[in-house]
Image (cartoon, rainbow, N blue to C red; front, side, top):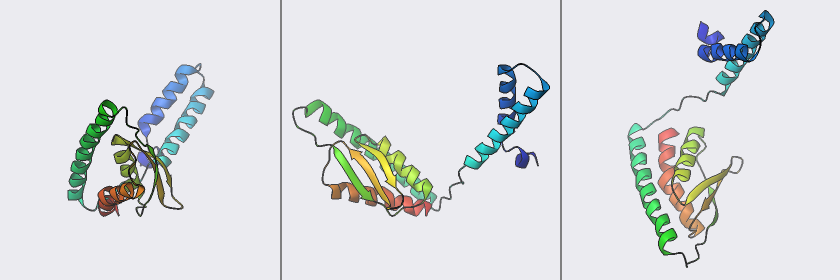
Length: 162
């Protein structure tokens, strides 16, 4: 019952108390603070994302192992570029990757994976075209990055979430 009226009761109470600490006490401020706190609580409830539906739990552990391996490997590669190849010109650049995955949770996990892996950073996802723009430290062929992301991450994320 109270969950439908106040989705976050502790947040509502805390905000109302905070309102009263920054304003002088009066019945009008108490009423206004309570109303503002309730509206903030409802706004937070509307921002609550849907719970992810994971279809294949065993693939989650496989993905975690792949990501840990790739992070370690990328750390070594980036360190070797920085420490041993200072004279060599590294060709960093932007790569566009067409994606088939559309699940918001899968896209969020892909963003985390690409940003957590040294040498790459998620920059922009164009939902109308289904393309991802990333920045890479040591740009190989664009086709290499596309096949790496699609084959190594996107495929397993689609099996987990879609």
